[in-house]
Amino acid sequence: QKEVEQNSGPLSVPEGAIASLNCTYSDRVSQSFFWYRQYSGKSPELIMSIYSNGDKEDGRFTAQLNKASQYVSLLIRDSQPSDSATYLCAVNIGNTGKLIFGQGTTLQVKP
Amino acid sequence: EPEVTQTPSHQVTQMGQEVILRCVPISNHLYFYWYRQILGQKVEFLVSFYNNEISEKSEIFDDQFSVERPDGSNFTLKIRSTKLEDSAMYFCASRVRDRNTEAFFGQGTRLTVV
Image (cartoon, rainbow over all chains, first blue to last red; front, side):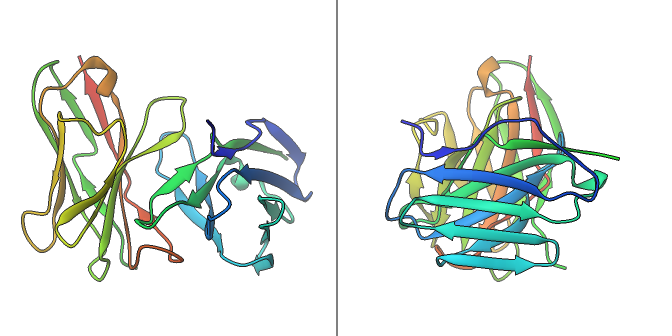
């Protein structure tokens, strides 16, 4: 049973546009949610964390969490070609802090 | 800025051989993890480690795998008898606490079993 779901994409947006990435999860007791960026052949790089319902903004990035709908999203404003990467949604499940990852959404920002 | 470091960056090994992947977590972090990512697939949890013992392991983490924290800084993953299907990127991660804190990943070790 899949626990974290993302649309694999690719999601293609023009430079300067807003990119919207979505993720759903199945475990209702999950408390911590993370977005990582992964360039090809590299390791996951933390972009945002969010722990409570609502929006959290950090520079051009906004994470949104809706626990009732089991939905978390990432908005990237003023997208740049350097934002082109795979964005991984990760959910903290259980008491040991392990992360369950989605399969990632590939974002392409076209100049 | 503190970071998780992993060595080697790339390891090629013969099927059936033992490999040890090494990690140095961030110094004040207490929770350590290994994940793997087979080419083109999602990042998968292998094992979590706290207070010098395994706190959780996945189905992937069978008897061929073991972890150890041999001293105050290193955290190792050993694969006793490698199989072709063990070829993957292996990532070490650490975090300060078990929940509601961020996990930081090392740059990974690419393991190729031939």
